[in-house]
Length: 309
Image (cartoon, one colour):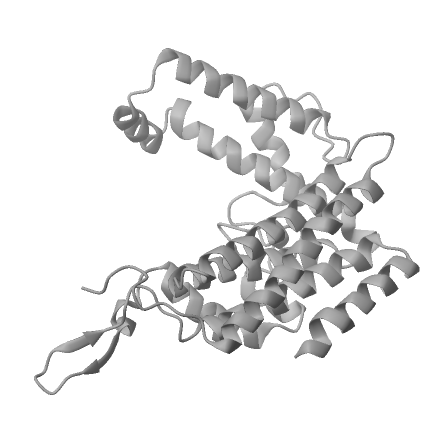
């Protein structure tokens, strides 16, 4: 068995792209405070601005994670995290596509996130078959159940008091479910482009949005990346690429396995990470910055990123 990290070494291309990613991550970290400052009104972020800033921070988190794990040569983990970054970037593109749809789309994301939390809580305090199975195996205390119930009530309050959701007087779960049709969440409802029914829609699918990630990628001219890169990374996520680790069969017929730590593709993966991270920077700066700040960021990009290629 190969020893962990025993033969790991970045080639020059990988080192170069790693340094470039470090510059991008530092710039993202620097600008997030500026974005928050711009989005804050009277000392507070609105729900829709909170969604946008959270998506940017998630992109920063993924880019930083790719930097960290690339140094250790764990290609599989880089691929998984890069897939996440690609998804969050596309979500951000849809959210910030234009000013006229920003608020509505932000509240769909906000609603969808809270609904997901409620669905999880149902497994711990609900009465469905799945919930009972979970509860039997989790050995929840009465205090645990009380805390989940309290959390559910807090989410209902957030939904009921959110100015962008218009779901007032939400006191019971039934009322919550009844109001869900405002966001096209009823099972089997026609809500996706090119499809009559979507039983498990994503937030961007609501109100006749893209029915899945491929359609979302197509909307932003990134379908080739979806077909080639995202599909390959998805094989890693789902664990159906184990045989890719066999790189040759030796003369005696024994398979020769790759080391757990690999660096052959790190340079390419880091290049993709840089590309998506810069796109995130430019996307959010276009949404938040004035002309002077946009020009300043463009100059940084030309000097530190693009012209170094």
